[in-house]
Length: 450
Image 1 (cartoon, helix red, strand yellow):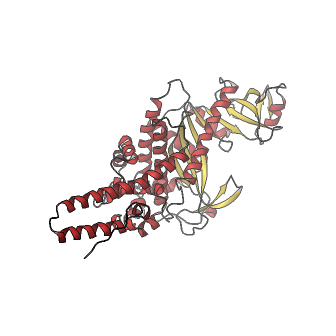
Image 2 (cartoon, helix red, strand yellow):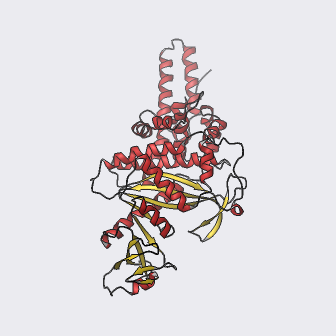
Image 3 (cartoon, rainbow, N blue to C red):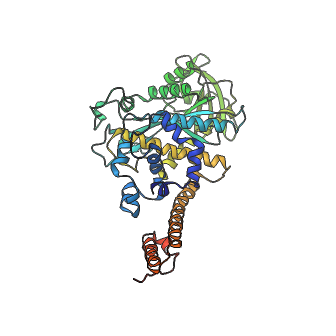
């Protein structure tokens, strides 16, 4: 009964799960159960939940509650500290990235993209490692977590590879501490210790894990917050060229034996009548690292300019600007996961393990949609594809209803006496009365006589 309600064998979801080997990825990450429903079945229920338009609480109050596992089954699965969710996400992402790479030229530019986004939990009080974090979009502090995300892109698709859920390294900013009864060998304990990391250290750790897992890229893209000289130097030492936006701050650049701030560097360039690219120059940072600065027109404020930095000084200025434009895909990723896939809002548990596991499942939803879009060469946005998936989940009710109807017809065909036929007909009437209203309306009024 549960399998009939979750995913039909002929549905797009099942085809995706089979193509992406979700069950195998779960086993490789040690995500398994010793009894009861399998981990794959529970993962499928949570995965498809967002497409049904209901949260878990409302779903348990519906007519389907009798065919679903209990609330404790779902929350035990999400709050399990021993599950290696990072390993699961890496295995799944690597499989999808290798498929995407088989579709493009070997000369096409591939990039790693680093960015962070705030998961606000303003109404929470007891959530584990809850902290006051700064939200750059609003310029204010808020209660929640900072999700530092590493992604991969080929300018056609964006693939999330890994993430770190940061609390705060400052004790004064942490509103709740971590649980004290965890095994230090568990994956949950390691993820909690990562939450205290500084952002630059977390960036290095994310990229090192991605390289060890087998991901490759030509450049690392980041916004102005991360484009700092110490981080640039460390990434250059690892052979990872960086392209990032830089702010006009107090840092000095060495050019022709003079130390200049960013504005002075721009003013030293010859005047240009170019529409977008105002000029470029090779300079050295304070630590001696050669970088190329490209100045472009600010489209929001035409009298101002923006500066893009590249540690690969051989690149043409126009190519630097084009490659940096690929960074925008992570912004659309954050938008889709928060607006459509209910990142940070679907489950409001207090456990840090629940936050990690649910975020990974949301990333898996995005990966499946991106894979489906790329497979079918679909020009639609992921938002449109989301509603297509939601309609399909609605159609699964039709499939389940027809399967049950066929079973009743088979039972009716075996009834020989009038009494047995009347009993079967009453069962049919009772079955129709329990259907969703939009299916019930398709049937004419039926009645049975005792």
